[in-house]
Image (tube, protein in one colour):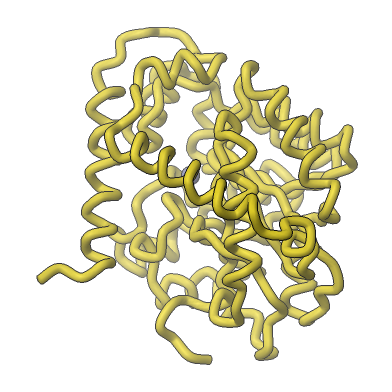
Length: 322
Ligand SMILES: [Zn+2]
């Protein structure tokens, strides 16, 4: 009989295939600039409709609890986005206004340092963004209004080919299940650094690491570091594509730190207490994915659930006692 993890992975793959089917025959030859135009193409899958209703219900239950007290729990909560299309900008401002009521924004390197030094004295939020879309420049502008330093995880091959519409379209469809969305070029990436943000690596071209050997992964990491260093200043942080534990392994975690990265991030939900061992190479960061058109009450539910379920095990790869 399949176990819960197998059922979960099965459901996850069904959802990915559903999105791929919707997007692969797209013949529009322009960059999409509004999220509503993408959601129209993708249409909500049956799983996402059920999920939305379940989240509404969970959020309703949680609204009966003393929210402020839970949200003020000292912890580090990472949140990440992928894109901020024109019709998502107002939602990002609204989200940040909401978050700053109970939290302190912190840069990515400071967040990692605080976890490693077991020095968490307040409720902190750390923001990042994956995949390097050009519309991240709008996020950076908004972050600046709130005094936020974020980390932008890029795929150097996408950045190298940012000027080619055809290559961008192929990458968006095959790797991200999206219609064509423009990526940042290296000038754009450098403009983020000038604004006080950090650049992280997200592999060269967003491959599923579960299908790649450790030797090939090590080469990918080394090339990513080399290309980002060549074009920007430095790169300290790594986040693996697709982000679930089943896309990664402990042996790949070891490679991430051995090639010189200082942190390794997933896209698994959860928040962090300080690390109780003094080996930062044990740490796997959890980040909560956010789509800006989600209702704020759903995001609040995730924040509260994470704070209530926080435990030291969140700092490590699952099923491994350190
Ligand atoms: Zn990604």
